[in-house]
Image (cartoon, rainbow, N blue to C red):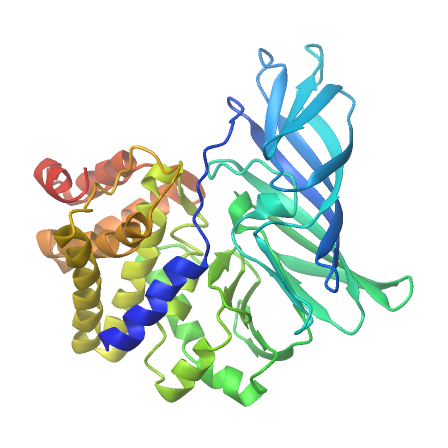
Length: 433
């Protein structure tokens, strides 16, 4: 059990390419309201051209704003309140007039070859995003800043695509090209934005409230239905444990490439992972992990990366909790034992750290494994500390109270203490801080 599950989820930690040294300039109190992105990815050349329109607010005392732009080359910036702009080391600084409207808008044109964040495989006619949205659009990459997004993708008409939110429409454009228009009205963090492009097989399941879609280039529709057969049950389980209904009309899962990544309304999973699930239908931890992020991560989001365990530790633990619900106690205990083994190996090597990091500028592999596996194990210990009924009541209270908001470890602690009416100072001191 440990060999198959742990190998898969450890691969997730490595291949999300995460993660993400994020020592970037920040704009004080920047609040992006919405993004409108036009993108033309050339799969053959791995080159992209795009335009991002950003509607944002910033305090009247501020006269500049910083956006992350990765390896992209900025070719033009326009805006009513714009004075000038500069680009340096992956940061676009926009200088704005003191006298301006409360809501500001800039349009940024750019092009380039993304260094990461957009994986393009000409040999397979595929393209998909992984985490670093600032490598294919211009954005504020800080997790606490939520915004809605409209994505317009221009792709060959022989391919199809998936992106955030709802597909508004598609239309023919030019010579053998299509424009797809996707819109997500619910505000989420920019790292949850993304898309996948390819010549996919597509199987769909319509529930009372949500359309579940499964995509792949290498699996048949019956195989896709088998691989993702527990998706609806997982969704019901997470809704019950969180006390919050899934918020979108669709949820899509795409077997593609060599990565795992949750995005708002869909997830990409390593193409070969499907073979593992077809061989053993209980090997669904990564499916449930990415789906759990639609609550813990995407909608209840760490305020900054120092508290990243609140995203990844939660999703990892919830995959074990689902296994307990679906496959029984032995499966749950095997998961917990695998988490504990990873954590103990790190601890014995002398690399244990608090789950609240002093910074997340240059995380090591051990650091990443700690937020996933120590984080999940600590939630298991918290459940043992509180008892099942009190623990799940507290998790529901926390999830309902902070759904759609940004959180810190102190916020999480306060919520659990309020719900359980227990003082957890010693527990958090020992296991987290």
